[in-house]
Amino acid sequence: MTSPHTSTHYGSMLPQDQFNQELVNNVHPPQWRNPTPSGRYNLVVIGAGTAGLVTAAIASALGAKVALIERHLMGGDCLNVGCVPSKGIIRAAKAWTAVREAEQFGVHVSGEVKRDFGAAMARMRKLRAQISHVDSAHRYTKLGVDVFIGNGRFTSSDTIDVDGTTLQFAKAVICTGARAAVPSIPGLAQTSYLTNETIFSLTELPRKLGVIGAGPIGCELAQSFARFGSQVYLVEAMHGILPNEDRDAADIVEESLLRDGIQLLCCGKDLKIQSANGNKHLSVASHGQQYDIPVDEILVGVGRSPNIEGLGLETVGVEFEKSGVKVNHRLQTSNPRIFAAGDICSPFKFTHTADAQAQIVIQNALFPHPFGLGYASTNNLVIPWATYTQPEIAHVGLYEKDAEAKGIPIDTFTFHLNEVDRAILDGEDKGFARVHVKKGTDTILGATIVASHAGDMISGFTLAIKGGLGLNTIASTIHPYPTQAEVVKKTANAWRKTTLTEGKKRFLKKLFSWQR
Image 1 (cartoon, rainbow, N blue to C red):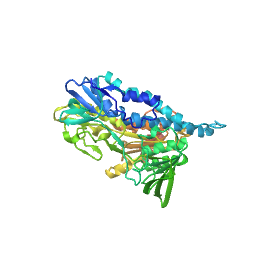
Image 2: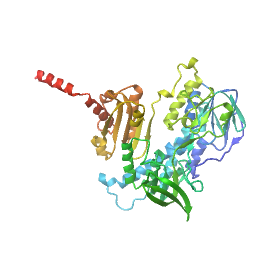
Image 3: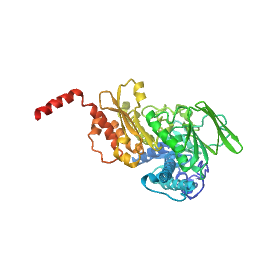
């Protein structure tokens, strides 16, 4: 056994309360002793985020000898500073909003309603710690994986060094993920700021919060903090919010953010940040007006940067670029013995994409096939995604602009939630489902849903695309009534109505007249 690994680089795992102590004890045990390698590993995985964890767990379950290396926190961004904590505070913010809007449901709240931001954040930390055992070093050891806490670096064509210990491998997988990107904004480097990696450490609510970037991270957290009671200023260089989404859908979410009191400064130009009189100042021009806004905290949410530094990729001939490690459709790097999965190589930086790619890596790395036949491929993936604002936006497949760029003629069908009974009864009737099909057919090319539960509802369209099922199958499938998911069936019914042409109507009229 090697000496205990006692790194204290826990990053944003503050405050050091019982919940974060439990988390760290699970995913970066302070007194962890790395195992002593014995012989060559079938697979060495660098990075214990979603892609690395799934790769290691499946490979070990199949009987392979596996090593898993993590220098920071097992569980990666998703568990520690991403999906899990963000959804925890989104849920708390939603509860606060429900109290605020309770009167419309006949609930009259009298007297002072105490809102405790510190308690909401403590709840998030408690639940994150509770979930963390699934990604823990001890659990993976029990699964048969050799877990190494330390810095992994390629040193030759078949070796990786972990803080002085050499691991030999037959195949290796790079799953080191990505981190919050830091834009070149004048004054930012001289001013303290938050990212998704640090904002979940807050215990006191900022009175005024500046958010830079109106993508998914920026919008989700801007809305949550506005609902908690912060005055939020959301700065975006492009027009509106969520610039990559269906514009009609994004506009509905934008209206919701504005109702929550967020001040949107879109088409922002000449953004500068200064510190003065103990405050941080955002200076930005938006729609011809100049703003100089004092804030307590600044959140930067403008995308992700790949973690490629310090891996020794040049040593083993693994090509990479600004966006990450370069891979082919089998997730193989320029070195045929080394693969990659997850945010380090994928343009789709989602936990579920990392999971799917890990399974592709397993098949291709552990079960090579002559002449490349039978390999798993990323070309076959159908990847949905969702932004968890209120309402949510979820999407799968092509947008209208994508089909136009590819020269694919389409028909588009939209059905609004204000015609769906359950959405009306829930008071959640702002939204719609929209589907694009190949012109003249029911073949689904893409779909967008904006609704309170859009992330749950998009799977119907995703399954249809993956299974080669068209709108006719969805229209003929019985959906329970009343649910908001009926909007999926009703959108398919909108297509079905177009199949009843004038010629068919004339024929049916004659047929029925003969039957009288």
